[in-house]
Length: 228
Image 1 (cartoon, rainbow, N blue to C red):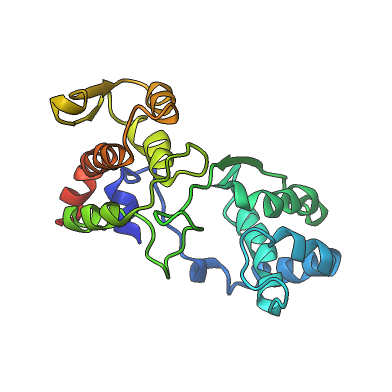
Image 2 (cartoon, rainbow, N blue to C red):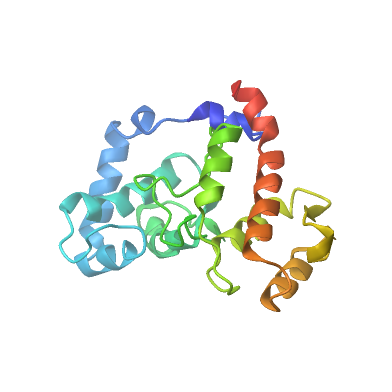
């Protein structure tokens, strides 16, 4: 959604939005797709989709075409640096290897971490286990209230949201709690927060509450832009 991208700052005269339908039906695009399809084996295409595809035990033909189209997208758009989640790395490696065979340059690639869904499972739009830029404050609070927060640090979705979304954007994260439970705590670094949580010195409910307030604050400008 274009307005969601704009809401988090991706806008201005140097930003151009291109829809797939703007380029993918062009003759050159289709020819390049077929040229790459002739070179890439079924096994390579399947492996590239291992982390992003569904039902890969019995994949559809379209799932094999997907990585090839993604490669042609990179070439057609003149991409210098391909940005994606770490689950895209095998597709990007295909692009680096095979795009030069059709006279295209190999892109640089940058990969971001993949975080768990709020229920601890793989993030999925069908499950609704994620925070959306287009969520209202009430939506965020309801989702965070139901979120899974295990006592362990590993694979903890609340800690992941704090690490990758809240702490990088806020100077201080405040964990509020009654004096009888130690009083409020302020953190200026994620590492300090994770350490104390791993030592059992922060209750999961208190961590969730601090994360909720943090992500509500971080996304406030986006909600204002979207009128939510």
